[in-house]
Amino acid sequence: MKNQDYIDDLLGKFFAQEELNKEERKELEVWINSNSEEFQKLKHIMAHTEKQLHKAPMFNAELAWKKVEPQLQTQKRISLRSWKIITAIAASLIVAWLAIRLIPTTESLHYENRTASIQNVLLPDSSEVILFPNATIDCRIAEASGDRKVSMDGKVFFKVKRDVSRKFQIKADETLVEVLGTSFIIDASQNDQTKVQVRTGKVKVSSGSSEVELEKNEQVEISGSKITMKRIEQPASVFGFVQKLLVVQDEPLSEVIRQIETLCGVRIVADAAIEKNRITTHLDLTRMDEVIQELANLCQCQYQKTDEQNYRLFSK
Image (cartoon, rainbow, N blue to C red; front, side, top):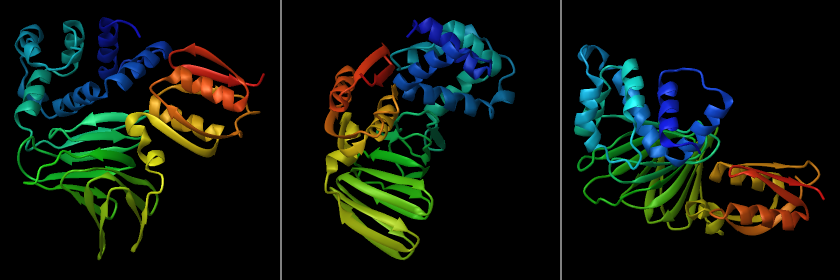
Protein backbone atom coordinates (compact mmCIF):
# COMPACT_ATOMS: atom_id res chain seq x y z
CA MET A 1 0.00 0.00 0.00
CA LYS A 2 1.20 3.53 -0.79
CA ASN A 3 1.86 6.20 1.86
CA GLN A 4 -0.98 8.01 3.63
CA ASP A 5 -0.66 11.22 1.58
CA TYR A 6 -1.31 9.18 -1.55
CA ILE A 7 -4.36 7.55 0.10
CA ASP A 8 -5.60 10.99 1.17
CA ASP A 9 -5.47 12.14 -2.45
CA LEU A 10 -7.42 9.06 -3.54
CA LEU A 11 -10.06 9.75 -0.89
CA GLY A 12 -10.35 13.32 -2.09
CA LYS A 13 -10.80 12.17 -5.71
CA PHE A 14 -13.32 9.52 -4.62
CA PHE A 15 -15.53 12.00 -2.74
CA ALA A 16 -15.16 14.51 -5.57
CA GLN A 17 -16.48 11.76 -7.89
CA GLU A 18 -13.37 11.97 -10.05
CA GLU A 19 -12.48 8.91 -12.08
CA LEU A 20 -9.88 6.54 -10.58
CA ASN A 21 -7.71 4.28 -12.68
CA LYS A 22 -7.42 0.54 -12.03
CA GLU A 23 -4.36 0.85 -9.76
CA GLU A 24 -5.91 3.70 -7.77
CA ARG A 25 -9.17 1.77 -7.27
CA LYS A 26 -7.21 -1.23 -6.01
CA GLU A 27 -5.12 0.85 -3.58
CA LEU A 28 -8.23 2.59 -2.24
CA GLU A 29 -10.11 -0.70 -1.78
CA VAL A 30 -7.20 -2.15 0.22
CA TRP A 31 -7.18 0.94 2.46
CA ILE A 32 -10.97 0.81 2.93
CA ASN A 33 -10.81 -2.88 3.93
CA SER A 34 -8.25 -2.01 6.62
CA ASN A 35 -9.96 1.20 7.77
CA SER A 36 -13.66 0.51 7.38
CA GLU A 37 -14.72 2.51 10.46
CA GLU A 38 -12.83 5.61 9.32
CA PHE A 39 -14.24 5.29 5.79
CA GLN A 40 -17.81 4.96 7.08
CA LYS A 41 -17.33 8.14 9.11
CA LEU A 42 -16.14 9.99 6.01
CA LYS A 43 -19.08 8.69 3.96
CA HIS A 44 -21.48 9.77 6.65
CA ILE A 45 -19.91 13.22 6.77
CA MET A 46 -20.37 13.67 3.02
CA ALA A 47 -23.97 12.44 3.13
CA HIS A 48 -24.77 14.75 6.04
CA THR A 49 -23.12 17.67 4.22
CA GLU A 50 -25.88 17.81 1.61
CA LYS A 51 -28.23 19.01 4.35
CA GLN A 52 -25.77 21.67 5.50
CA LEU A 53 -24.60 23.16 2.18
CA HIS A 54 -26.68 26.32 2.39
CA LYS A 55 -25.88 27.02 6.01
CA ALA A 56 -22.21 27.97 5.63
CA PRO A 57 -21.60 29.95 2.43
CA MET A 58 -18.37 31.45 3.78
CA PHE A 59 -15.81 28.84 4.76
CA ASN A 60 -12.07 28.94 5.50
CA ALA A 61 -10.87 25.36 5.09
CA GLU A 62 -7.40 25.91 6.55
CA LEU A 63 -8.67 27.73 9.65
CA ALA A 64 -11.41 25.16 10.20
CA TRP A 65 -8.88 22.35 9.89
CA LYS A 66 -6.71 23.87 12.63
CA LYS A 67 -9.71 23.94 14.99
CA VAL A 68 -10.97 20.44 14.29
CA GLU A 69 -7.82 18.41 13.60
CA PRO A 70 -6.85 17.99 17.31
CA GLN A 71 -10.31 16.56 18.06
CA LEU A 72 -10.10 13.72 15.59
CA GLN A 73 -9.48 10.43 17.39
CA THR A 74 -8.49 8.29 14.42
CA GLN A 75 -5.06 6.78 14.12
CA LYS A 76 -4.68 7.95 10.52
CA ARG A 77 -5.78 11.53 9.99
CA ILE A 78 -6.80 13.12 6.74
CA SER A 79 -4.18 15.48 5.33
CA LEU A 80 -4.89 19.19 4.89
CA ARG A 81 -4.41 18.79 1.14
CA SER A 82 -7.14 16.16 0.91
CA TRP A 83 -9.25 18.15 3.35
CA LYS A 84 -9.19 21.09 0.91
CA ILE A 85 -10.27 18.79 -1.90
CA ILE A 86 -13.24 17.60 0.11
CA THR A 87 -14.18 21.07 1.32
CA ALA A 88 -14.15 22.24 -2.27
CA ILE A 89 -17.01 19.80 -2.78
CA ALA A 90 -18.92 20.77 0.36
CA ALA A 91 -18.13 23.99 2.18
CA SER A 92 -19.84 22.92 5.38
CA LEU A 93 -17.91 19.70 5.96
CA ILE A 94 -16.60 20.80 9.37
CA VAL A 95 -20.05 21.95 10.44
CA ALA A 96 -21.49 18.56 9.51
CA TRP A 97 -18.71 16.68 11.32
CA LEU A 98 -19.26 18.63 14.53
CA ALA A 99 -23.02 18.15 14.25
CA ILE A 100 -22.55 14.40 13.99
CA ARG A 101 -20.34 14.33 17.08
CA LEU A 102 -22.54 16.64 19.16
CA ILE A 103 -26.04 15.37 18.27
CA PRO A 104 -25.83 11.54 18.31
CA THR A 105 -29.35 11.17 19.72
CA THR A 106 -31.12 12.47 16.63
CA GLU A 107 -28.83 11.18 13.89
CA SER A 108 -29.76 8.17 11.80
CA LEU A 109 -26.66 6.28 10.69
CA HIS A 110 -26.42 4.21 7.53
CA TYR A 111 -23.74 1.61 6.81
CA GLU A 112 -23.44 -0.58 3.74
CA ASN A 113 -20.88 -3.04 2.44
CA ARG A 114 -20.53 -3.00 -1.33
CA THR A 115 -17.20 -4.84 -1.33
CA ALA A 116 -16.55 -8.56 -1.78
CA SER A 117 -15.23 -9.05 1.78
CA ILE A 118 -16.61 -8.55 5.30
CA GLN A 119 -16.45 -5.10 6.89
CA ASN A 120 -16.26 -4.14 10.59
CA VAL A 121 -18.29 -1.26 12.07
CA LEU A 122 -18.30 0.18 15.60
CA LEU A 123 -21.69 1.66 16.56
CA PRO A 124 -22.06 4.77 18.79
CA ASP A 125 -22.86 2.64 21.87
CA SER A 126 -19.67 0.59 21.30
CA SER A 127 -21.57 -2.42 19.96
CA GLU A 128 -19.66 -4.17 17.18
CA VAL A 129 -21.04 -5.16 13.79
CA ILE A 130 -19.63 -7.24 10.94
CA LEU A 131 -21.27 -6.64 7.58
CA PHE A 132 -21.06 -9.42 5.00
CA PRO A 133 -20.99 -8.46 1.30
CA ASN A 134 -24.08 -6.52 0.16
CA ALA A 135 -25.36 -6.09 3.74
CA THR A 136 -26.78 -2.78 4.97
CA ILE A 137 -27.90 -1.43 8.34
CA ASP A 138 -29.70 1.74 9.40
CA CYS A 139 -29.62 2.60 13.07
CA ARG A 140 -30.71 5.21 15.57
CA ILE A 141 -28.43 4.73 18.55
CA ALA A 142 -27.51 7.33 21.14
CA GLU A 143 -24.24 6.98 23.00
CA ALA A 144 -25.70 6.86 26.50
CA SER A 145 -29.51 6.75 26.66
CA GLY A 146 -32.67 5.66 24.85
CA ASP A 147 -33.57 2.38 23.14
CA ARG A 148 -31.31 1.27 20.32
CA LYS A 149 -33.04 0.48 17.03
CA VAL A 150 -31.55 -1.09 13.89
CA SER A 151 -33.04 -2.15 10.58
CA MET A 152 -30.99 -4.34 8.29
CA ASP A 153 -30.76 -6.27 5.05
CA GLY A 154 -28.39 -9.07 4.12
CA LYS A 155 -26.18 -10.99 6.56
CA VAL A 156 -24.85 -9.22 9.67
CA PHE A 157 -23.05 -10.32 12.84
CA PHE A 158 -23.84 -8.29 15.98
CA LYS A 159 -21.86 -8.13 19.21
CA VAL A 160 -24.13 -5.97 21.36
CA LYS A 161 -22.76 -4.05 24.34
CA ARG A 162 -24.83 -4.98 27.38
CA ASP A 163 -26.98 -2.20 28.83
CA VAL A 164 -29.93 -3.36 30.97
CA SER A 165 -31.43 0.15 30.97
CA ARG A 166 -32.27 0.15 27.26
CA LYS A 167 -33.27 -2.34 24.62
CA PHE A 168 -31.44 -3.21 21.44
CA GLN A 169 -33.93 -4.08 18.68
CA ILE A 170 -33.21 -5.25 15.15
CA LYS A 171 -35.74 -5.41 12.31
CA ALA A 172 -34.99 -7.77 9.39
CA ASP A 173 -37.87 -8.16 6.95
CA GLU A 174 -40.81 -9.27 9.14
CA THR A 175 -38.55 -10.57 11.92
CA LEU A 176 -37.87 -8.61 15.10
CA VAL A 177 -34.89 -9.51 17.32
CA GLU A 178 -34.58 -8.03 20.81
CA VAL A 179 -31.47 -8.33 22.97
CA LEU A 180 -29.80 -6.85 26.06
CA GLY A 181 -26.23 -8.02 25.50
CA THR A 182 -25.02 -10.89 23.34
CA SER A 183 -23.47 -11.83 20.00
CA PHE A 184 -25.34 -13.41 17.11
CA ILE A 185 -25.87 -13.54 13.35
CA ILE A 186 -28.96 -12.42 11.47
CA ASP A 187 -29.05 -13.63 7.88
CA ALA A 188 -31.82 -12.08 5.80
CA SER A 189 -29.98 -12.42 2.49
CA GLN A 190 -32.34 -15.10 1.16
CA ASN A 191 -35.78 -14.19 -0.18
CA ASP A 192 -38.64 -15.03 2.21
CA GLN A 193 -36.33 -16.55 4.82
CA THR A 194 -34.47 -15.17 7.83
CA LYS A 195 -32.05 -17.04 10.08
CA VAL A 196 -30.89 -16.02 13.57
CA GLN A 197 -27.90 -17.82 15.14
CA VAL A 198 -26.78 -17.04 18.72
CA ARG A 199 -23.11 -17.20 19.68
CA THR A 200 -23.39 -15.90 23.26
CA GLY A 201 -26.14 -14.63 25.57
CA LYS A 202 -29.87 -14.71 24.83
CA VAL A 203 -32.17 -13.09 22.25
CA LYS A 204 -35.92 -12.96 21.71
CA VAL A 205 -37.10 -13.50 18.13
CA SER A 206 -40.63 -12.70 16.99
CA SER A 207 -42.37 -12.95 13.63
CA GLY A 208 -46.10 -12.37 13.29
CA SER A 209 -47.79 -13.98 16.30
CA SER A 210 -44.90 -16.40 16.96
CA GLU A 211 -42.11 -15.74 19.46
CA VAL A 212 -39.14 -17.78 20.70
CA GLU A 213 -36.11 -17.21 22.91
CA LEU A 214 -32.69 -18.38 21.78
CA GLU A 215 -29.59 -19.04 23.88
CA LYS A 216 -25.97 -19.87 23.11
CA ASN A 217 -25.52 -22.23 20.12
CA GLU A 218 -29.20 -22.16 19.17
CA GLN A 219 -30.67 -20.99 15.89
CA VAL A 220 -34.04 -20.34 14.33
CA GLU A 221 -35.18 -20.18 10.71
CA ILE A 222 -38.20 -18.03 9.86
CA SER A 223 -40.07 -18.63 6.62
CA GLY A 224 -43.41 -16.86 6.40
CA SER A 225 -45.32 -17.71 9.58
CA LYS A 226 -43.25 -20.86 10.21
CA ILE A 227 -40.45 -20.79 12.81
CA THR A 228 -38.06 -23.74 13.05
CA MET A 229 -35.73 -23.89 16.05
CA LYS A 230 -32.67 -26.16 16.35
CA ARG A 231 -29.23 -26.54 17.94
CA ILE A 232 -26.05 -25.41 16.19
CA GLU A 233 -24.10 -28.66 16.10
CA GLN A 234 -20.77 -27.15 14.98
CA PRO A 235 -20.52 -23.61 16.36
CA ALA A 236 -16.97 -23.14 15.08
CA SER A 237 -18.15 -23.60 11.50
CA VAL A 238 -20.79 -20.87 11.98
CA PHE A 239 -18.94 -18.32 14.13
CA GLY A 240 -15.31 -19.08 13.34
CA PHE A 241 -15.00 -15.96 11.18
CA VAL A 242 -15.10 -13.80 14.33
CA GLN A 243 -11.64 -15.09 15.26
CA LYS A 244 -10.65 -15.52 11.60
CA LEU A 245 -10.98 -19.32 11.91
CA LEU A 246 -12.56 -21.22 9.04
CA VAL A 247 -13.82 -24.74 9.74
CA VAL A 248 -14.35 -26.73 6.53
CA GLN A 249 -16.16 -30.07 6.41
CA ASP A 250 -16.11 -31.89 3.06
CA GLU A 251 -16.62 -28.79 0.92
CA PRO A 252 -15.42 -28.22 -2.67
CA LEU A 253 -12.31 -26.11 -3.06
CA SER A 254 -14.27 -23.50 -5.03
CA GLU A 255 -16.59 -22.91 -2.03
CA VAL A 256 -13.68 -22.81 0.43
CA ILE A 257 -11.98 -20.19 -1.75
CA ARG A 258 -15.18 -18.12 -1.90
CA GLN A 259 -15.40 -18.09 1.90
CA ILE A 260 -11.74 -17.13 2.32
CA GLU A 261 -12.09 -14.30 -0.18
CA THR A 262 -15.18 -13.00 1.62
CA LEU A 263 -13.62 -13.13 5.09
CA CYS A 264 -10.16 -11.84 4.19
CA GLY A 265 -10.51 -9.65 1.10
CA VAL A 266 -7.92 -11.64 -0.88
CA ARG A 267 -8.12 -13.07 -4.39
CA ILE A 268 -7.41 -16.77 -5.02
CA VAL A 269 -7.48 -18.22 -8.53
CA ALA A 270 -7.65 -22.02 -8.88
CA ASP A 271 -7.38 -24.18 -11.99
CA ALA A 272 -10.66 -25.75 -13.09
CA ALA A 273 -9.08 -29.20 -12.70
CA ILE A 274 -8.90 -28.85 -8.88
CA GLU A 275 -11.93 -26.64 -8.10
CA LYS A 276 -14.14 -29.64 -7.30
CA ASN A 277 -11.65 -31.23 -4.89
CA ARG A 278 -13.39 -31.63 -1.52
CA ILE A 279 -11.68 -30.23 1.57
CA THR A 280 -11.92 -31.02 5.30
CA THR A 281 -9.70 -28.88 7.54
CA HIS A 282 -9.38 -26.00 10.05
CA LEU A 283 -7.78 -22.82 8.66
CA ASP A 284 -6.31 -19.93 10.65
CA LEU A 285 -7.09 -17.02 8.35
CA THR A 286 -4.67 -14.71 10.16
CA ARG A 287 -1.86 -16.72 8.50
CA MET A 288 -2.79 -16.50 4.83
CA ASP A 289 0.45 -17.93 3.43
CA GLU A 290 -0.02 -21.03 5.58
CA VAL A 291 -3.65 -21.28 4.47
CA ILE A 292 -2.66 -21.34 0.80
CA GLN A 293 0.07 -23.90 1.50
CA GLU A 294 -2.45 -26.09 3.35
CA LEU A 295 -4.92 -25.93 0.45
CA ALA A 296 -2.14 -26.84 -1.97
CA ASN A 297 -1.14 -29.84 0.15
CA LEU A 298 -4.73 -31.08 0.44
CA CYS A 299 -5.32 -30.72 -3.30
CA GLN A 300 -1.85 -32.04 -4.18
CA CYS A 301 -1.19 -29.02 -6.34
CA GLN A 302 1.20 -26.09 -6.49
CA TYR A 303 0.65 -22.51 -5.38
CA GLN A 304 1.97 -19.08 -6.24
CA LYS A 305 1.81 -15.78 -4.36
CA THR A 306 1.59 -12.77 -6.68
CA ASP A 307 1.36 -10.16 -3.87
CA GLU A 308 -0.21 -9.79 -0.40
CA GLN A 309 -3.72 -9.94 -1.86
CA ASN A 310 -3.43 -12.38 -4.78
CA TYR A 311 -2.71 -16.12 -4.90
CA ARG A 312 -2.94 -18.92 -7.43
CA LEU A 313 -3.46 -22.69 -7.06
CA PHE A 314 -2.62 -24.81 -10.09
CA SER A 315 -2.11 -28.45 -11.03
CA LYS A 316 1.37 -29.90 -11.01
